[in-house]
Structure formats: structure tokens, C-alpha cells
Image (cartoon, rainbow, N blue to C red; front, side):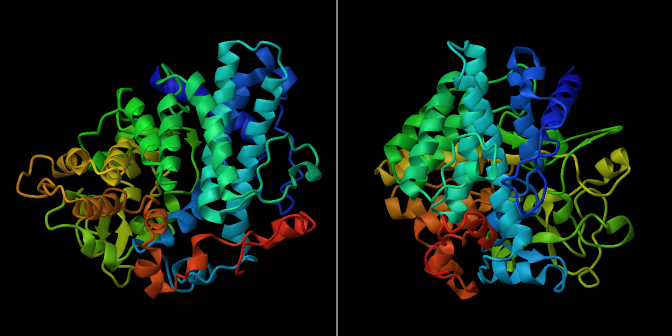
Length: 492
């Protein structure tokens, strides 16, 4: 029954995603939504249309896929481009070396377009529901899903570009999608408004169709925004609720990033992949991070690889090191030995993206197209809660939540990862920074954490980071399409 529900969810999600996530330059000239128009579906088709948002997120560059890796992971000190020196060398200079480029289109424009494509589809659903007189709670629930996903996209855009246009209307002709930039404070206010509505109408869990937005997702995202804004008590208030919704740390850190770890008790939100015989709902997100080898070791493109700096940051004996780092020339932990470096192009690979030998055999392919993308985990809830408590001077309480995360990582080996015992605020702050880096290594949190902590210039400065690199330039083609309504970010 679980797979039947997933297949139905994915089939409906894919139906309405068809034709939307194209890579044409004029993305404001939107494509028709396949064969299913709103009036052709029962009850206005809101369930099917809402499911379509998840398929669109899975297929939209920037929301997932290669652009997400470059923007969210490779800009940090944890990761670098990887692959070979000649492969995507321009993008390596841009994201490893902070040589930002408003005219680069493969990554930059795709990230911008991908998020707005999802936003525009959310707007369609929200606007159509708003036109209904006295919608029932089920219909308001679909609106809440659309608002939560719209908020998620605006949160990403806010982190990457800073001031961005807030577009809430339907985009039926290109001019509908043109608006001036709003301030970061205005974007934040819109995200908060969307999530406040969403949390009131979303359930804490769904009985079927895993991967849909929940109350916990809306409130965790809202808490994260408050964390970025240093509104500590507001962050705590949201997370107090989330911690009553039944989430728990998955007992096996390694398994979290395998197919068997999908939609675990730790999952707050995941982009759903599904791989069965004759069924493949996925994208290249994991494949592009696979070991770049030959023959049976041709597992992917070799992008987003760990740095030596990250390898050295793990505490002695921390089991998360071997769950995060795959070493060239060493065993993979599953009975195989990774080829040496060289001939492999990199000494380290992202093990959280690794395709297990058993899974390769199961699906008769080398490249990982089956594990979900873990967007938000309960470990983040605990560490955000600890950080907010500590900043309010409640350090003795904060360490309990850090230690929950460390205890899960430690497992049964009591000789490693001792509890944090200091209650000095500065010491606890450093412990939280370390724990976030290690727990979420290669998952796309590190760059944004460094920026919001005010540590980016110190940590990333030797790599070329300057203060202006907090935000990426607006894609020049988007400015050109706007006829000058959009204005480039400062210092570009």
C-alpha cells in the first residue's frame, strides 16, 4: 500500500509538472500545464494541482539538482566543485573562488527561474482558491500547502539574492511576472505571512502520500527565518510546538541518507524520489555527486566533494566522518574498495550521495536515483532550539539539545563525542557552530550559517569571499527581461 500511494502521488505530481520546468530563457512566457487544466479536474482539481507542485519542485533546477549544490554547498568551506579541473571550470571559479558572474546562465539563471517557476504555480492555486466563496477546510489545506512551498522558495531566494521581487499574482503574460525588488524585510514579512496561514491549516502528519508539507515543516521553516533574523524567542516559540509533533532522531545516522532512511521519524521535509521496476521519479541531484570513475565505478559526475578542511574538522572517532566522507583508495564500508586517487580525480567524495552496491544491483544502474533529498531534519530543530536558548542566556538548558544530537551520532560507543558540559555562553556558542557544521556537512547549511553568524569573511576570506558575496548578483537576463525594472544588487 505504501508504494501504491507513492506511485499515485508521483504520477499526479508529474502530470501537472509537465512543461513547466523548461530551461528556455524567456521563463516568464509560461508553458501550458500538460493535459490537465483546472476546470477539467474534480473539485477544481486542487488536490491534483497541489500534488503537481511537488513534482515541479523535484524537476526545477535551483530548488533541487545541480544549481542547489553550487549555491548551497560548494560556496562553503566544506565543499568544492570537484570533478576534473576542466569540467565546469567557470562554475568552479564562480562558486569556489567567489568570482560571481551575473551573466553565467547554467547555474545562476536556473536557480532564479527554478524558484520563480514554483512560486508562479503556487500563486495560481492560491489565487483560484481565494476566488471561491467560503472554501471548505480541505480546500484551505491545499492553499496552505501552496503557501508553505511558496514561502520555502522565497526563503531560498532571500538567502541567495537578498532583495527579490515579491510576486503574488497569477503570471498569465510575461509582464505579470515583472516587479521591482522588495527589501529583505518585506520578503521576510511575506514568508512569515504565508507560513502563519500554512501552519493553521496543515496537519501534523499525512496518513498517505509521504512528502507533503506539514504543520511541522511550516513552523520549522518559520523558526529558521526567525533564527536568521535573531528573533530568538519567536524561534523558540515555533520549535516548542514542533517538538510536540512526534519527530525523533533516527537511531542510525548512516541510514538517514540511504533509501531505507527516507521519511523516517527525523524527516521534517524531503524532496521525494521513487525508483521501482519501470518507475523512476527523480532527477540528477545525487548522480552529479557520485564518484567520477570508470566501469563499475562510474557512479556520477563527481561534483560537490568534501574539502580537507572539513575532513580535519571531525572530532577523533566521530562516526559521522565515515558516514560523510568516502575516501579514494579505501573501503566503502559495504565490501568494496574505492579506486585510488589518482587515477580518480579527487581524494574525497560525498558519502551522503553514495549509491550502495546492493542498490546498484537492485536497480541495475550505478547512479543514485532513489534516495530522497533531506531538506529539513529534526536534528536541525534541536540545534536551532539550542542556539536560540543560548543566545537568550539559557546555556545550561541549551546543552541538553546539543547533547541529544551528539548522543545519536555516538551510538553505542561511549568513548567518543563526550557531552558538552560547559555552560559558558561563548563556549556553548562555539559548540553549536561545530555541531551544525559536522551534523549537516555537505547538506547545504554551512555557507548560510557562516554568513548569519558574521563569520563568513574570516572563514571564507582566504578563498576569495568579500562582504558583497553574501548575496549573488541578480541574473542579467532577468534584468534585461524586466526592461530595467529590476536593479542589480550593490557592488556588481
